[in-house]
Structure formats: structure tokens, C-alpha cells
Length: 378
Ligand code: PLP
Image (tube, rainbow, N blue to C red):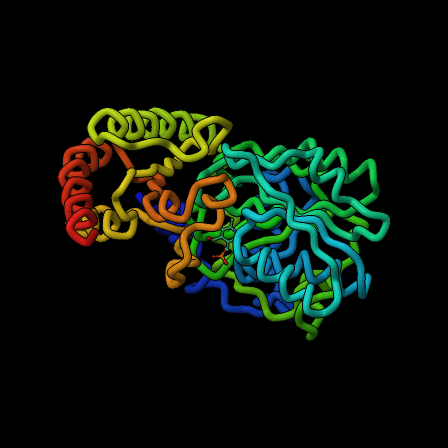
């Protein structure tokens, strides 16, 4: 129940990756037969991703994952301007937040818009934050901790009106929601393979035709000069196939997960007193339940469930080594203690009703034990 942290590589993605590793060893930049064979794999995968996003193949840049895509987009625009102002939000993933903080040390100005108690950004706040020197708006599509979906289309409209480049981190949204770059009017958008049943260390960045980026790394000018380095052909093949299948299966799978997630939330709220759902008041991706257990430390619940071989998370996994409570939840108005008492359950392809029922069976005793230990500790 920790699919927002990562997903297992699906069978079909593994099969295409294995085939490429076995049969397709050429360098896609080589002109000979082996190179052309590898290049064909890249072209096919690029087409699949473009189709999944409503983009053109030439607008897809393969990267080493979500973090690299986020950095490429934000630093790429920033470097081109040299200075200026960026609008982002307080609930972005560290791949965006830390990139913006790093740019602040280089002299860029950044406005971090806040969220309401449901975890949602107000597009009007984004509009108000835009200045004459604003070079970029970076707002995530769906939050990794709460699953709350942000009003990207409305923000895209504002960005277009004001002539500001709009980037969205769609790492958690892609494959779970319809993501169409033209409809949402985004100029750049990031995705990550390991959140959609492809391997880790592969991702993509959509860059609308006409948006100019300075690349992070210089080299052989691969990916139309936007990301140098010999491509991860097997990973790219797996990503393309996983993205194609994710889109094909998205609607029924989202609905299936919604039913399971709602059963989990209802079951927890009924079986465990003093519980509430963070971000319940607004649209969320259908697989995520972020639940607060009053007076029960979330991390202790994670360990209690781990003893039962149930994997959940108490803050975003990428920030799991930090001892600070979730900045996403405190931004929604939760106190430090309330944020610490929260646990994220996230379901996926291999989750079923048996998993949810087993979790509901063991959870009340786990929470009781954590609460009595917390009471004993004062
Ligand atoms: N953005 C969001 C919203 C994420 O949830 C994650 C991963 O947790 C990332 C970016 C980073 O992606 P990657 O792990 O592929 O670097």
C-alpha cells in the first residue's frame, strides 16, 4: 500500500526491456544497422509517450527520472533568462522545491503560493503572484502525499494569458488521471517511470515546441540538445510500453482503485476512533488515502504495519530520512502533532480487496498499541 513511493515493474515492461537488453545493443546515435535498430526503439517509445500526453514525438525528452525532469525544466528556463521571478507552491515535491531554493541562492526570486485546508492551490493566488519579471510557473498536477489534484487547466489559462511558461510535475498524476498537455495548456510536464510500473531511473519531460531550455548537462547533444548522454534504450522501451498500457487501462483501473480506497477509508474511520482523512474536501487521485490518527504517531503505525508485512508511509518516501513533519500537511493547517499522526496509504495494480480487508483487520490493534505507548511516554 505504498504505490506513491514506487511501483513494481509490470510484466509487459520487463519483457520489452529484456528484449532490448538481449537483442538491441546498438548506440542509437550510430548510423549503422545496430544503431538504427536502437534508434527505432527510441522512436517507437517517443511516439507512445506523445500519444499518451497529446503531444508531438519531437516534444518528448527522455531523462533519468522525475527529479531530473523537474530540474531540467526549471533550471533550463531559469538559465536561459539568467534572472527573474518564479511562482511555485509550498506543497511541491522536493525535486521542485529544492531546485527553486537553489535558484534563490543564485539571485532568482521565488514566490511560494499556499494551499487551503483541503490542500488545494487557488489559481487566483497564482495570478496575483505573477510579476512583470516572472519567467516560470511551476505547479504540480497531483500531490504525492495527499493525492489532491491541482487546478492545472485554470493555471495554464492564466499562464498563457500572461505569457509565462507553465511547468507541471505530473509524476503522480500521469496514468491516474487524463493528462493532456494541450487541454491543460502546460508548456512543460514531467513524468517518472517507476510510478507507472516501468523501472526506476527513467523518466520523460514534455517540452512544448518553441520553449527553449538550457540543458543541465552538455555533451553530444542528444534529445535535440535538451539532454546529452547515450540513451537508456531498455528503460525507454519499458517506459513507452508502460505508458501506453497505463492510458489504455486508466479509466477502469482508476475506478477499481477508487472503490478499494473508499472501502479502506470508510473502514478505518468506522473501526478506529479519532481518525479523519486529510484532503478529503476536494478532488484526489483515486488510489491515495492520507489518514490522521489522533494521538498516534504515524511513524510508529508504519512500523506496526510493517511487522504485519503491510507497507505504508508516514511522509513522502523521498523525505523519509527527515525528522520534520510533513510540510504538505502543515501547509494545510494541521499542527505539527497532527501532521506527525498521519499515514499515507496508496494503492495500485496489484492491490485487491483482500489486501484492504487484511489492513482493516490489523490496523485497530496497531493503532491501539501505538496510542497506549504514546500515552505511557506522556
Ligand atoms: N515528483 C513527484 C510528485 C514525486 O512523487 C516524485 C517521486 O516521489 C518525484 C517528483 C521524483 O521522481 P523520481 O523518483 O523519478 O526522481
